[in-house]
Image (cartoon, rainbow, N blue to C red; front, side, top):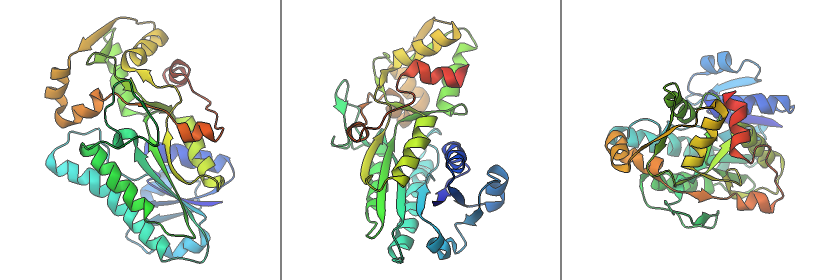
Length: 297
């Protein structure tokens, strides 16, 4: 397949492009700076820019993956919240608009979303059928998904709601590991909140499968089938590093330090990939400690 990846220079994008290339697919990139994209991913067939007429090449494209979006890992000022929303909505809207004007053949569109669409739900099991939340991140995800779902036939759309993605250069993982330099792990809040996660190897394989397999359509939770409590995540890292000591930071301090963003850190979301499991999908890294060992050691 000829696959166009938007946001290819990001952490997930780079991993996906390499995986697609290894699988024998032809990779194209869409970015704001094609020179940077060429330097970052030199093996791709061709590089396009958003401000150029990239859509004139749709007849050569079989699938589009949109991974663009400003990180939610920065402090949520009023100005930055607008950027978080616009960086996702604007690119998705442009892709859908261009595809809806192109009817020569069917093109698959994979659009990213996040499990942040769900509310913090304690121990309740969350599936694709669960109701969305109403906080800022949930509102972003709902608008984001709405834009993707406006894609018309003959095209096919798939939305992947990503959990916490563990990869070697992941900011969240590096922040967790930072405390271990002082000999201990840090638990945020009471530690009983559920964390729904996925290993980067499983994520890029699942994205690729959804492009190759036309039976995939609609919304899927892209998470491991085994979410863990936050304290279990920290304990697993401590076991790998042989540093079992754990400290706890209370909720109120997290809210002071991170502001509105604390809602993400303290949320309890026990998300299950029900539709993937129903489709018979198996995960290479379903268990947290096995997954983390490949990234930390």
